[in-house]
Length: 99
Length: 173
Image (cartoon, rainbow over all chains, first blue to last red; front, side, top):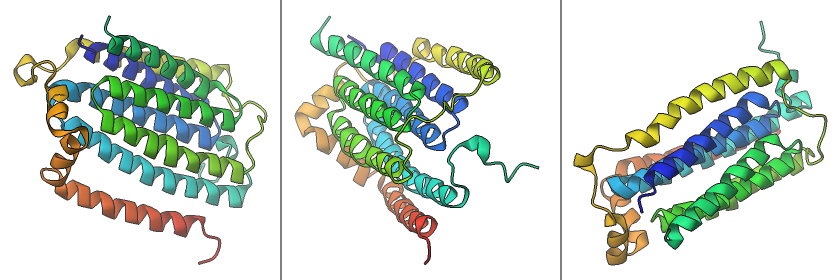
């Protein structure tokens, strides 16, 4: 049976949940995890389409994973640096850039 | 209903429920653990979609390496306990619901469209290719031929990320 349609639907819902998390939460680490959730929803789209369009989708997922790993390392280092200066990771309390 | 389809739906349910729990738990630690459950379910879905190698990578890289990094930082900053709720108030909830609903409606048109018939491979091509060449070689061959330059650029990206992470996280260089 062709699973393309269901897989794209699941991916759409996962992506929407990730966006909801980013918009609703204030904890920087949780927001970061929601971004990972969105990346994974896109990976699911690539894999679902690769079933019909060839192996390029798998290669792209490989690259997305490498970029996600790099992003997690740098992002978490930034959060650590912010915590060291401000003693908080709550985005509401971080407003030194506000005009 | 073949076993593959049953497995696909079962793990889709797990992935969606745990993703919802991930964005709604107050404690960042609980969020991270629910996200691990989502990633595991997604790797099972990848297997159901003929991407066994990517499924293994998902467990190794995402659930294994990236999530451990997240948990490590949560523990390091001592954020494990559920503090006061960090979810935005009714105003933020309304804005988020409208934006998410709008975006979901747009994404929802995607399953109906699908790729055009002319460029579609016949049903079962990927599975046959994997039976013939093995599931690692199917991904590895294009990675080291057609996509060699992006692959090398990825290594530079990872190097830059490592240097950047050390510079940012170290107190004194």
